[in-house]
Image (cartoon, rainbow, N blue to C red; front, side):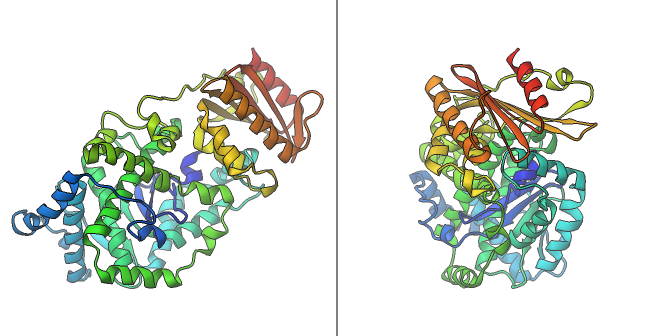
Length: 478
């Protein structure tokens, strides 16, 4: 279950559900996408209550004139923008200057800008973004997500990704080309201007903090530690959400708001509305919780503290994003797993090893593909909240095609472990039926086991045969 494909990020890590203007980074392609924002999120108070520091407000008020009269803007990228309306170019230039003021990051170079039609976007999604997502990747992702109870068997994940990207993306920043794209068939109105303000924050972030190099936010690093990348993505997106909302407060025109209202009066998102439950909720994470995380930093120390989070004090887990009070001191206590593949035999191979994190622990408990085994949100959140660390491994038998997933959880204390174990037991009862006399569950063609290894730890195993389950349990108990 590589979160870069699940989330997508991850960034469809990402496209998201009604909580704001969203972006997603395809680590394989190097794009930062801008999802069409939710109408409620674009009112200045309903989504995120901005409480800027006095310094930032004064700076925004007093430096606008300075930018107009004293600041020499970077050279225009017009030579690489053939066919783009000069009036739109001028608006983009102005928005970049305004965002630079608000975000307190200088514009070093003017990057190329382009507008795509919806038809051109779909072509790029199919031929660029999804060209490296092979059928084998889809099959394995669906298999593992099914083991975790998040997707049904034989789910058509590739087509869903294509339809979601085509429906939801309102713009993107290509980190390889260093080019900004706005997706529109209707010119450059309020929705496009707001999208552009959000996107340009990503340009400034990449230029000053370096997504791939300094933040280590790249495909290889995220395959090794998707939890850290989820936290970095939330920082990136939360920062852009905060700045976009400040832009709306300080610079959006009445026409912008009229355009947004008109757009949303007719906007529909049938693909996202009918996506799997966990995916709809997961798509919101970097935007909703990322914005709350960044807002907490901003209220304490303005953009200086946010910049520090991009530098020497980067967040490392979804736990820190969900609970800003845990940042930066509470780092995950992830266990070290034994080599299960070697213990199970030569036909077994490790396909993936990573960390679920607090957020995905919640999703597993509360957002399964069958509503009948979803725990209530409050129960699932409370159970996941005591998360202290985890490590899961996915194994496959090359001969039989059988899969196994084993997850070892560490919890903050014995009370948290007890609460979480009870939640997983209730989840297992709902999903598989009553536990057997030997402490196992069987259902949906799967065999499952839960058992404690210490007062603060327990193991969860999902296998496609009872023999494999028993062998894995023996290895993890030794």
